[in-house]
Length: 516
Image 1 (cartoon, rainbow, N blue to C red):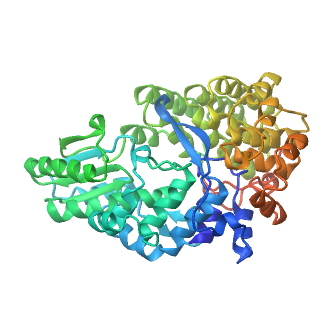
Image 2 (image 1 turned 180 degrees about the vertical axis):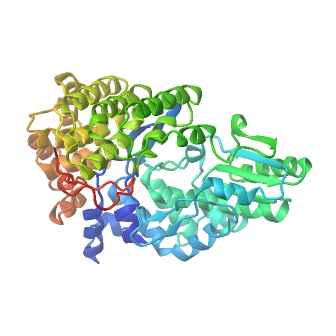
Image 3 (image 1 turned 90 degrees about the horizontal axis):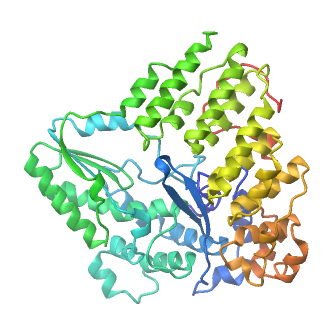
């Protein structure tokens, strides 16, 4: 488990593929007993997470947090040491569709599968007449780290052994606190360990509901819960008990997303059905079907602003080929989606890559792409929207886009290590000289344990801001030096040549590729 967590469970899945922890996992695995003292001390040092905010549908943002590599290694090691206990707890849930599984060669360390929600709902609702839907308010930010030993050992035992340093729950609790500078409220959103903690808390609640309430069937995707019942009174009783169970873990339901309704209900969002009927045909040379498809998608996105309509509309085109005469129109339509939902960019990038991989005749209009991406950077950087800028820099790197000066200058002012690293990497790839006095100012003594640790290390590794790196003494910081000496980098500069999207299935055959 340790190697998997370090390689495939550390950085959030929402980051561009240029960010990697593969060399970090290799170095830590090869170190054996030669690990730096910070990894072996009984008492962990406190470090800060680096923050990155993520574009979500509906205008809300999600703040991702990435722990310092010292702290994450220790937390992942604690998970690995107690893998059997954690797995047993995760398996208590009869309803979870996000139960962590250690699957070799999966995209993530703790794989949560790719469950067909509609099919699972059909099975869970069989014979039922009422449905309880529930959602936990501010779930990850509300998790109290001391509930980890409660979930693992029972509240009574955990409280009796609260000072036992060898109790597995206490070990994980302590290491998790160290990841977030001593905070006991909230867990990082992004690493796979957080999924493990979430399921640790919620799996026993699922089990209690099944034992103590008249549940016909259930389905849970992390904190998005559905339980079915034959009688209204049974659903009402279960809601009451669910609130009680959550209160024991100092959690509470989101009242705006919790309700009891009569069955039958839709098994999937109606917009999915509407769009599925209009998916363009690969064999049809008409431009109008593409216009109809995206016109419908734009209209549905306005009707369902919380549902990620445009992201679905693009991702469902996986196996749809574009004809040469349609290509200019399709490009315009794809880039237009960014106006309504900037989070579409990562889906656009992969779809464009796939299309050009299948058919080398489809030449990317780089001026069109650069204009759309530059506009996105300018508008997003001004309001601190990191994920849009990071994915824009990945687009620029992958497709060799010449961004506007205003876009570059806007990015250089952001307080985000991932933006900083992606921007300077893109600038190097494109042969553009860029420097940020703001980012250089982060490089102060002991900065590796602060919130911009990622930029601090990569500046040291990549030769950026050399004077400031020297003044910050990053070259003598023990863990930085250990990683440097063992070839660790969190940026894969060869990814452009070797990139293949994992989000989509690429059919064999069909056309050349290249960087055209």
